[in-house]
Image 1: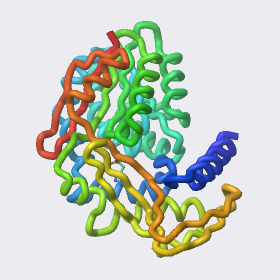
Image 2: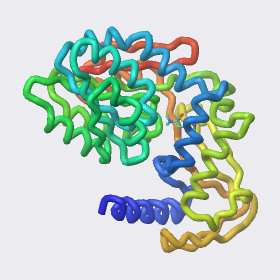
Image 3: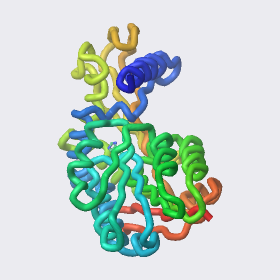
Image 4: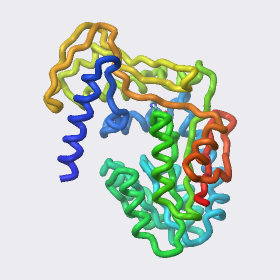
Length: 312
Ligand code: AVI
C-alpha cells in the first residue's frame, strides 16, 4: 500500500514537473534511488565536495557537548538518516549516559535497513519508513513523559528546500516539539563561487552521473547521452542549481507518468537547488519559527555550521 502510494505520487510529480510551461523541473528527492544514493555517497568522498566532511568534523568536535546539553533522558530522531555515520558519533556520546534510543526517519526502506544494521550495536534503533513530519509525530507520541527529544537534520538537506518552504518546514517541526526539545540543523555556508562550481561539477563526473541517473530511474527510454549535466550559481539567491540540458530536440515517452514530453535543444530540467546560508539567516529562520538559537558550531575550513536550536 505504502509502495503503491509512493508510485502514484512519483508519477504525479514527474508529470507535474515535466509539463511546467516555463522551466521544467523534477523534485530532488527522486535523485536518491539505490544507484543515486550510492553515487551521492561517492560524492561525499570527492576532494571538491567538502560539505559532508565538514559536517562530520563539527559533529566530532561537539558531540560530547551536545550529549551533556541533552542530559540523560533523551530520545533521538533523525530526519533522513543516510548512512548514519555522523550520527554514530552522537549516539556513542549519548550511550555513555543512558541506553541510546534512536529513530531514523526516511522514506527509503533500504537506507533504514542499512542504518539499523550499522547502528544497532550502539543504540536501540526504531526505523520509521515515513515522511519527516509524520515520523516526528510518531516519535513524539511514543516517548515517555518528561523525555526530551533531540531531532537531527544534518548535511544541509534544509538547503535543498526553497527558502519559504524551509521556513515553513522548520515551523512545522517546532509545532511537533515540546519545551526543552532540541533541533540540530546543519547548514552549508556561502562560499566563493569557484569552490561551489567545482563541488557540484567535479572533474571525475560523479555529480554528473548522480544527476543523469534521475532520468534513467524515471524511464529507461531517456537516452542519457542526449542530456548534459549543467550547474548554475545564482549569487543573489545564494543558490547552486543542477540542471539537465537536452543536447537536441527530442520527444520522450514516460509511461509511468502517462506522458509524452518534448524537449527543445538546449532546454533544461532543473533537478535540484542547493541554498547556501549566512549564519545570521539561520538565526532569523530559527527565531521566526519559534526556536531559540543557542549555538552555531562552525567549520571554518569548508564553511559549514551545525545550529543548535531549543524549544523555549
Ligand atoms: C543532500 N544535499 C545536501 C546535497 C547538496 O549539496 O545540496 C545534494 C547534492 N547534490 C549535488 N551534490 C550533492
